[in-house]
Image (cartoon, rainbow, N blue to C red; front, side, top):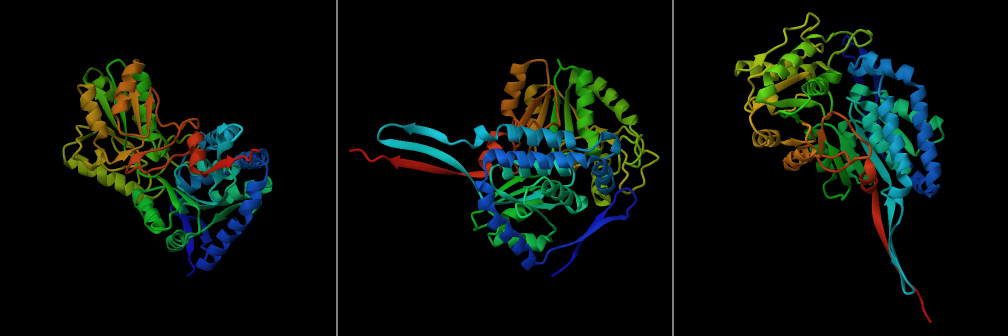
Length: 460
């Protein structure tokens, strides 16, 4: 069964790119080529794999003048922010730096009788299904360490960012990574499911919706294929009474609104202690009123359209339901709001957890702010969510942040920062945010399997 994948630009609703999908036979053939290439790739010295991967990263950086407007056209991020190469390079560079230590044999002990150790071996073929919101950075999180560890990689990118996988493959191949070692493919959902259910891959890494992650796990059921997922989020911020309020407002509102709110670890709800609440709301409103909504190709634009009209419509629906239930909106509709992908950023107060805007993932430029009177109340509200990716705590007291952080059901706890992925730390979540972990030494552990050696020496 053939078909086309079509990327519709949020700028004007035009078709930006179209690509034909692979048939079932073509898809299985592509994976077979990856399997056939894997042993030779893994046999190369680690340092050679590291150098080739980093050369591919550099080649992506050389394309940045083309990539930045492509991202704007495909998913709406303003060109003024310069693309993703900084984070892309930082993450790959860190994983390259720690590769030798992370992949080294674990020495258990050796004496005149026994030698014992544990090796880390690549899974084989790693399937990476990447999202559109940060299309380069989310992909490199797995692509770089998977290749460095000796796996071959098959990348399927989101339709909304259709050309990203092509760009990455083009760059890596030009740097010397063999074509069968790193392949970009265009697949329908049906063929994707057939591949996973057919045990085509040795590990699957998926970043996307909860429904998408469930589909991946259902397809893998019974195959014993490992599946790593990063799914939805409803990340909270908590501003304590001793916080630097200006820093808290600037960072949390940026975390809520940057990329039109389309960030995996974007701030979607904020809890503020009573003594700072009114000042926090006033400062937040002032910041958002200063945004310029518009064409992302315009250097003056600070917030572009959402990636798709249906995403914007979901945010509008959540806001409308909240207002009907008693919430207060603080931002008047921007003149550029066209009722489609161009959406007015919004701050809501008088919100409750009965409202979807404080419960369901919004993934758009809206944030609800609630007043709290204690750490215990804030912890209970932060944990009142089906998701668990990050939480952002604002206080001058590190011990207090650690104490509160220990009670929060998330994969990451930030103090006095938000919406940042440190490649030295494991990127992971809990609850409906999914399972698994990327980057850091744990990222390498998840992209390899342990193999134990228990060698008894012959003694006379």
